[in-house]
Amino acid sequence: DPIGPAESLFQPSFYESMYQALRPQGIICVQAECFWIHMDLISDLVACCADIFDTAEYASTMVPTYPCGQIGFVLGCRDRYTSCRKPIPLQSKVNQEAILKQMKWYSFEQHTSA
Image 1 (spheres, rainbow, N blue to C red):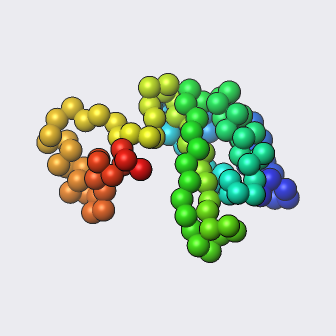
Image 2 (cartoon, one colour):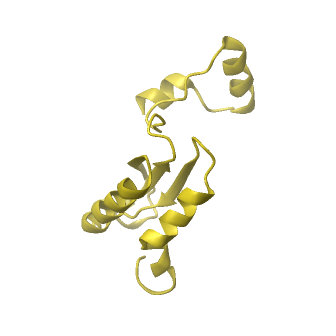
Image 3 (tube, rainbow, N blue to C red):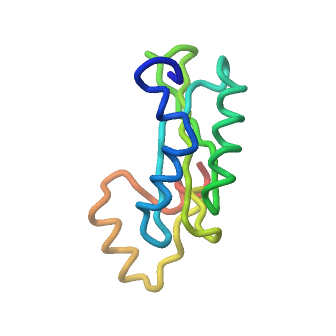
């Protein structure tokens, strides 16, 4: 919550520090509240990140134990060509197979469709 001990996690200086710590093409992911009850806060947070990061996106997932059953995330990328909406293109089939061996429940098709 942006009140109390976590208030600094909602300030531009926090996101500027994370941007500076990222490698080229790096991505950050931070919790960004529930869109059913905190849309103003989310809008401000995404706008703040859009001013700092080359790409800023909001993602959400359903979590039955959270208020309203939903929680969101802001993803910030240090490369305007990087997007979390689709997998990074891999150079060869060998790379794809190596990644899939390490990730039991992942598929490129599901990532793209989600």
